[in-house]
Length: 200
Image 1: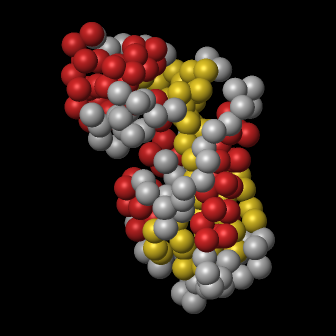
Image 2: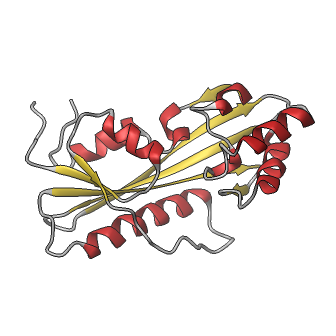
Image 3: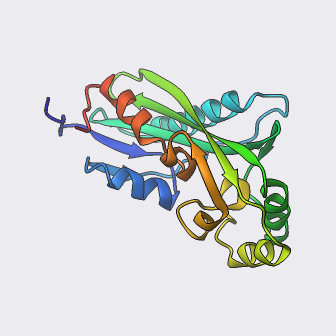
């Protein structure tokens, strides 16, 4: 089946990683950053956090499109790291990044990414999520300080980037690698089929 090239993706994200991942699918897309509220109650389960925030981001961009973009599918996504039930978002400083790394090192944690797609023509919505288990090796104080100082993890949940220098921190993953980067491509491609858009 041929890809429906009459449709395109609007990625509701300013993340360079998500932009690169979408670009790798070779389907038409554009970026419209979402400015949705990202606060959630502390008692929410991880899967509820990522699916709700992914949905909010997609809705914010969908509602901002005037006139409506009926040729588009709006895609929102959100990623968090969960360590022993504790949610780790993006660190606000290099000091907080080092603190997160001290907590993560030598242990396994989970990465949750939510994906929400909205049909620009009908408003129909589909939201789902993926979970990947990541094992981080034991790190020395020097390694933690050096990685935090690099600044690579400052805009990333859990304070590390698996696709960058952070690759040296990870010994094993169980699940989708791209989920850890920030957008589970296998899940997204399956969701897009529901909107008659085929990556392959």
